Image (cartoon, rainbow, N blue to C red):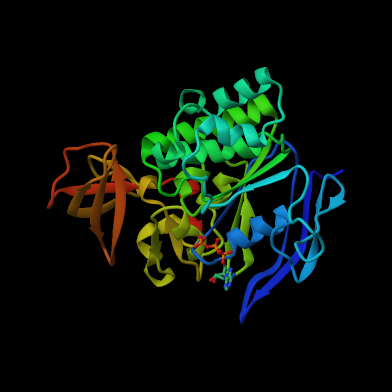
Length: 325
Ligand SMILES: Nc1ncnc2c1ncn2[C@@H]1O[C@H](COP(=O)(O)OP(=O)(O)OP(=O)(O)O)[C@@H](O)[C@H]1O
């Protein structure tokens, strides 16, 4: 039996086709990330899976049982699926332990384990109005996990979190999966939150799946510029300008090359492309170099910090680093 099966979901809101025939499946151990620009339908898809948005057409089956929408049930939602909205709210003026105790039916030991996993044990005596955004979010998540869902849907969980809280949340999500056996689907528009975590990424555009694949496939072999752009910067060399790349020419195809794919070598070698550094930008662990090469300008990334404007450089590429669009 498939863990989650989403088949041909359509949803029209007012005059927009928000979901336009979305189908995919998830197995129990698979981490799925749903990516897409703002308004592409990510939240609506998650809510449909949770039974909180009524699809106009199509079916969702969770562990073999059809997920009914809010129009079909008195109390919306589906047993075993928990959805954490990006706009979750915690009741004000409660102590965290009070808030959690209302939902809690777990034996003390299990509840304490859950609070440890969510890294909120030290917050239990705190009042809910004296918490940071990241802390509130982990408490909201713990509250949902008390009901021992088998599938947790997280809607933009990393937005509005600083790097420290983001990393805590990433560890918490990993521990939830490892220690509680809960499967997850995360929707996020930030590639850095999805590429390292997901087994499979589903990219939505205008309510349709633009591409579905492993993070490596999506990053290295995007089907179009929309997908390429969602997952990082890229160079697009138009087909009529691709001659400079010699052996990599494929008639009529543009070349898509990620900036980190260029190797910068000190001296002219076979097949190296000569360029002049026009700009150097410090990006933390890497430097972005804007380099003029015959007929165009490209961006390359390097860890070397000695390049400066006006330097002559030589660029090489491997066959696996070029993608044809
Ligand atoms: N209740 C609603 N009434 C009107 N339009 C809606 C409603 N809910 C969603 N939409 C529209 O449907 C489209 C998809 O919305 P959705 O929230 O699913 O996208 P999203 O990809 O999650 O966006 P974001 O990343 O900004 O949260 C948007 O254009 C949105 O304006």
